[in-house]
Image 1: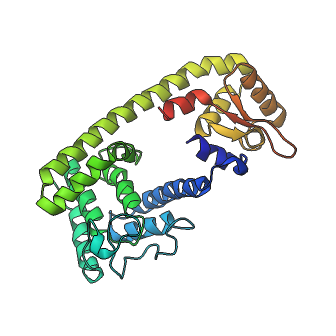
Image 2 (image 1 turned 90 degrees about the horizontal axis):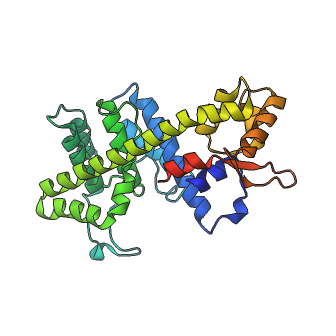
Image 3 (image 1 turned 120 degrees about the horizontal axis):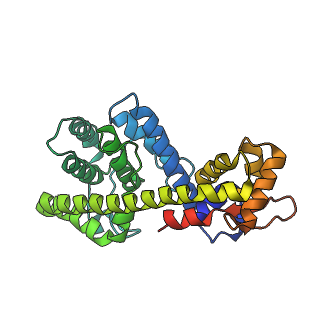
Length: 299
């Protein structure tokens, strides 16, 4: 997270390890695709149009951008070791000619009433990964629609529920459970795994949210004492939204008079509320970090 936020703040890209900038662009696209899907879902149900629009944004300018973003595959694809042939695949989804009907059935099920929304979501996720409708990006898109579905049916108040952390932590179990659905029709094992993922991630999210709220409340008197300014809480809100930032961006966009903004930055640094991430060098502005918030967010 720190690298992504520093990248957005305009930090030194030369210090990034090989390939890391590509990873960062994928993360930024994930966020853009989430925003686009959220925008569409305010007017539309969870549908194939939303799926394709989100995929188009997700794949723009990143790995897989040349693999028909936003369009269902027209050729076979398969899952297996890198470079493996079809005959060596561990899983082969349905043929491309059957995809339109299959995705129509998926869309219909997504918008049906169900006695348990989380079990419905478990089935939707497994079916989407089994169909593998795009040439690339299916895993990212399938995980993205977990919070979007939960938000649309009213399980959460905003689409902020990052389940990928649990799936990555138990990566082998995740793929094994999905494989057993297609191999042995073991839906119960998959649903139990998915529900445990939701429970575990919900507890982690709640812990982090409480930690962030407690930090915000504890910072109010500190920032007021450090800055002695009528803009103290305004400045605090700004650094909570952007915990790694260029000093020049704070001065330019925080909507605080320039002289006051510069003084607030100096005082926040003096009192250890923000810390230098990279120092000013030539035309490059100093980059600061609100480390306490990053520590909570990154666990």
